[in-house]
Image 1 (cartoon, rainbow, N blue to C red):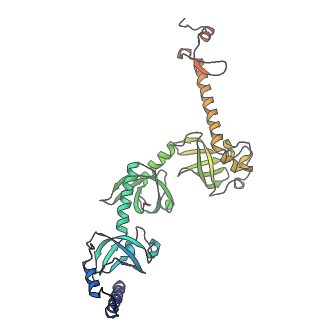
Image 2 (cartoon, one colour; image 1 turned 135 degrees about the vertical axis):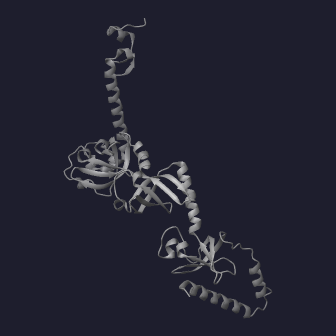
Length: 360
């Protein structure tokens, strides 16, 4: 007999002994006989067909699984590999402990002793596929952890399911080894439960993220690494460079005195080259007072959105002035710049000063 079969045989013996003790114990004053109890159990309406859902209570765990009380004569067992979607070494890693009440699916029956084989994994799998279909319909960006790979791409864990991300759908040139254990922003490409196909794209997710990287916008980032010339910042799966000259208005001799890998900070987008995938960042532009990033970085981050708004207004004003300067040489456009620097319709007075025809 295998270890599992021996364990089940032991449990069956315990049940038989307990039943015999109940049968032979004093029954004075009790009108409900053991025969009545056995008859009631036999007639209890419990669906034990394969694929049925059944409620049960965990009453004992072993190294190979757990025994489940399903309020029936039949013994029920939950194997460790049916306890959850993940690979586990101990059934308690899946939260399976004595006293747990849960709904299980009947997936098989042991022909030797009629023990029902239960599963939680099957129920969780159905829910996970449904969740993936919903997320695909909503076209949202999710996060998946890379757990393996091959020459064609990487395998990521998404909603407890193993999904494939082809290298053609990874935004940067890399290898499976370099991506192992990293979390990638992903979007669904194919969700086919019948074929067991779950394909995702990092490239599409990154395109969505990059579309939001407007010049002057403030984003939250994490310091990935430090170099003599600056710090590389992870901003939602995209690496941006915070050049040493853009950290503060004051001179920064040693970047490590201001930043450390793992630090979380707010940065402003200075430029974004989508073709080359390069993003330039700045904290210098967010300083309320020159040198605040060195003396009081917390203040810089608190005032970041306010300072970025001022920066964007200056950019917009500069662009408007540049367009106005161009229109000075294009009076036929019908627009001109007033003495206060405001762009507006060409007035008759201005037209006469310029020697241009008017409607009057």
